[in-house]
Length: 364
Image (tube, rainbow, N blue to C red; front, side, top):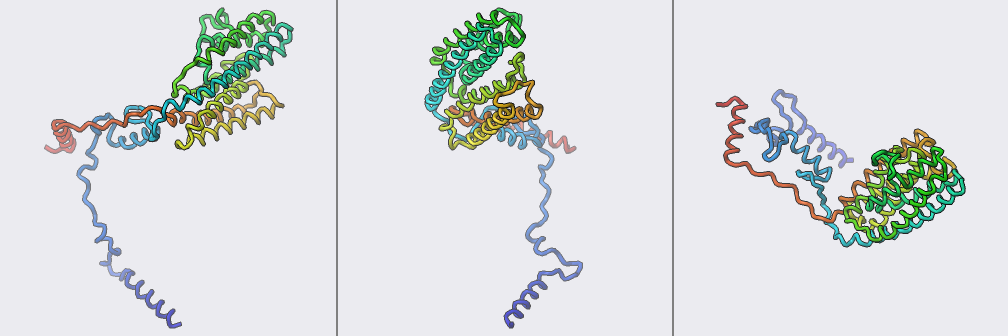
């Protein structure tokens, strides 16, 4: 009991010592000694620009921070804190993808053969199904179909890039057959196009086996596949007759997943790109699976796709694109230059700057 009384008395004495005494002369505890009022900076409001740039001084720090957040330097070049990867590490992923592409070429050739037989038998519904299968198989090539422009035009070319459009004699291949199948053209008139298509697909085996691309091209291709799908397939511009944009997006996603799979060993441990890409691709894959389920086990045409489903698909594709954009920087193989140092002003420039400052302040 005595100890409690002593402790209470001690607390009371300390509180009395710290409390203000109520006089008008009392000051806040220790403020005047520890934090005296500082004089205003003579430079405050006088800096108008930063030497070596055309950026106002008031914005310079913010803009440099924004550039760093975007992974670029003052010259607009992509920069990364990661050590560059040796280009030789991409040989195995690229060879894996070539083998994958060869398997899908074989699938597309088989589909083209079924398409030709369906056309010959006069079965439009069967021919439409065979067309969709062949087209989807071809889109699974993904990362390599952009490496052979002439062959790609003969297989998957659209009329908009040709003089005369759909009337051009160079408009052949999958989309020429698509136009005929969904506009009521005679099936017999499409057999010749199907033969040309099958031959063009068969010739791809050697082309893909010899195709060469740089590590940057390969790392960038996964993003380009989904970007093309968003622009040309989700909009319906590449499949105006069949409307099979959802099917095309699913095929493009499969190609992107394969590129990502081959590059995973190189992405591991390099920032968080691997996790972000995997997460976004899984969500897009899940959405496509739910759309397929709701439409009784097949992808609907764009016209059959509900408005909410279309919004969801657009959002998930955009999310995948955002994650995939990080891959080229994460897999960089070259050392990028450091941001350039700002040049030091000369004596004459410093004197001129001081004169301008004095003039602005009204000094003689």
